[in-house]
Figure 1 (cartoon, rainbow, N blue to C red):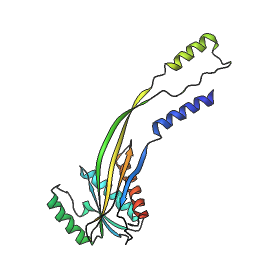
Figure 2: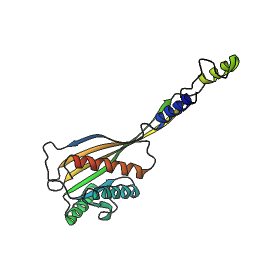
Figure 3: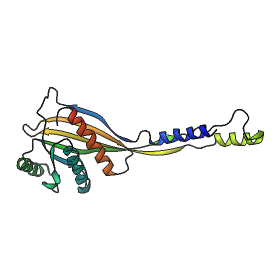
Figure 4: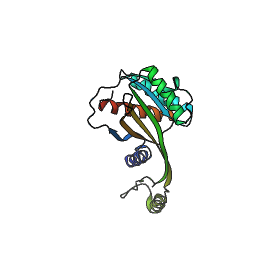
Length: 207
């Protein structure tokens, strides 16, 4: 009986945590692109507040450093983006020229999806043969088992998109979307996203 109880607990834990994490759910790269790999990138995070922008850009710069790629967080050279396209474009172009960047990565929050999922109660073992309950105890235990309630779980999916542009002709060469399921912190989202995106960029010959 103890083994059955442990099994039920394991099943319940898998239901609650089995789908957690971040995944690269889609990506696209320019057909026929065969290099060169980019070595000097400017990272631009488009987020509602500066804290998340700084957090994301710093995480990306650190991740790219591990690939031997030079990268600069844009907030260090283009602070306080205004959201005014022409004004921001001039400032970003000036920063790219000053840094002699060969590519720019622009990352943005695509959306946050919330939904509710019903989780049925975990299976509970009721002995078929023998057992300690007796007739009336068996009845009471069996009734309590079928009365075990399920419950609802609130799920959150955070969707980010990272896109790489070549500075030379300003063409998009790569883009990828990640979904983070029930993340604990914004830092967790940033770290997981840049790890997946950097690895994909490396595989596709962009780094």
